[in-house]
Image 1 (cartoon, one colour):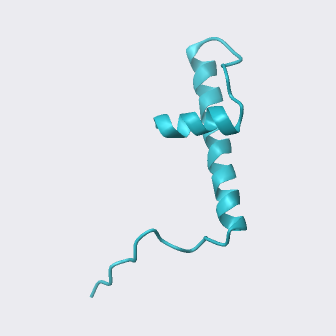
Image 2: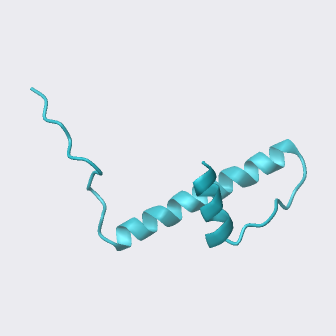
Length: 61
């Protein structure tokens, strides 16, 4: 989680939360996480790496 947050800080220029309160900080964190995942998926689609797995799937009977 710390590596992803470092990427959000660097790539999305996130420096501080805009709102106060636990609920608002949680909501903004969720939005940042969704944005990070969409950005990651976009780059994966553009590179043509969709439909592939990190490791080959095991064949079962």
